[in-house]
Image (cartoon, helix red, strand yellow):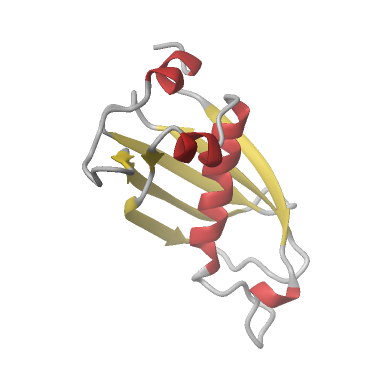
Length: 132
């Protein structure tokens, strides 16, 4: 399925007193991966929200393998797991500049109608961008 990769450099503010990336920041790294994955298809969260679609996270999982440190350059690989229907599921791998696996995980988001706050199907324009 569709894969996207994006890079980020660890800022001092993302680390703890030991210079290690605080674990809570990994949710933001996954979000960066997802938003850039969408952007690679020509779609943004802003576009989706304007069209009445929201994408709340309904589950997220992390497996921490090695510490990321201040000033590391991380590459976030984002993979679509399967054709999106009412949910969209991603897998992630984060590697450092030495090509060492730092973290892997997954997330599930639901397509929500912003007016009714009810689940809705994946927008046709996204399915078309994916070749479905």
